[in-house]
Each structure stands twice: as C-alpha cells, then as structure tokens.
Image 1 (cartoon, helix red, strand yellow):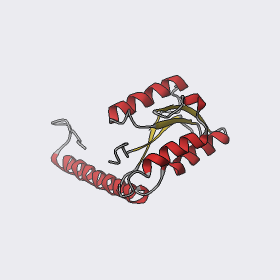
Image 2 (image 1 turned 180 degrees about the vertical axis):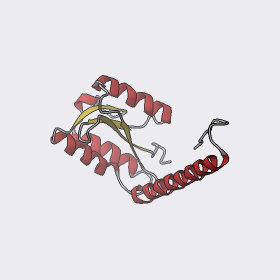
Image 3 (image 1 turned 45 degrees about the vertical axis):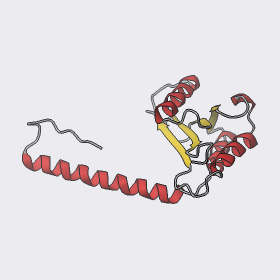
Length: 160
C-alpha cells in the first residue's frame, strides 16, 4: 500500500501526522486481513452459497451467472452449485485459504445492469487470475447500495 503526498502540500508536522496515520491504517488493515484469514480458513463455500441463495429467496439478491460448472449457468440447481464448490474445496484439506468471496460495491446512485455486473465479474476473476475456477455471481440489493458477490475457491483441480 502506498500513500503519495505532494511536495509542498503539507508542512513537516502535518506530513509526519499523515505518515503516522497511514502507517496506523496499514497496520489495522493487516490485522483485519489476518483475522479474516484465520476465521475463514476452514470455511467451506457452501456456507457462502447458502447465504447468497437465501438472499435470492428473500428477494434481496439475484443469481446472475456461473462459470466453469458442468452445466450452463441457467440450468444449475442449488445442489449443482453447492456440490461443485464443495468437491473442489475438499480436494485440499490443509489449505489455509480455500474460499474466494469477493464483494464489489457501488455507489447507491450507480445504475448498473445485471449484464454489466456479469461483465465486471468476468473481468475481475480474469484479472485476479482465477478465470478457470468455478465461480458464482450474485447481485445484492440489501445494503442500500448495489453490490456484487463473487463466490469461488482457491483450490485448483490438482489439489493445490
């Protein structure tokens, strides 16, 4: 994480306070990341799948898309989604980080179509390097702003 301060924008005291604040923020973010890794390391994606599917049943979310499943996205049942992710996650019992549950959050005034969210999910997973992994995309409307949940796994078919 980098913080850039423009030369001449701040006096030495202000610059020192900003650098100290940035270091504190970085430390907090590292602690949060460590906590998330510890609490989620053995969590299976079915729990995340249940969460998203429950939101769909409550009409607080919409299932948008799936990639790299054995059926077309629109043909998948909950069991298909659950089993594919569960089977992949259980290939490696010792992995520290099994689940990829990503949230892309947008401004409340953003008007983003479902198709646009599907394209964002595809672009995101490709950029993150797991476009060959099975993943699910859900649009949520339950937090006052549109956001996209992408659910996948870090476990590869060769158990790594």
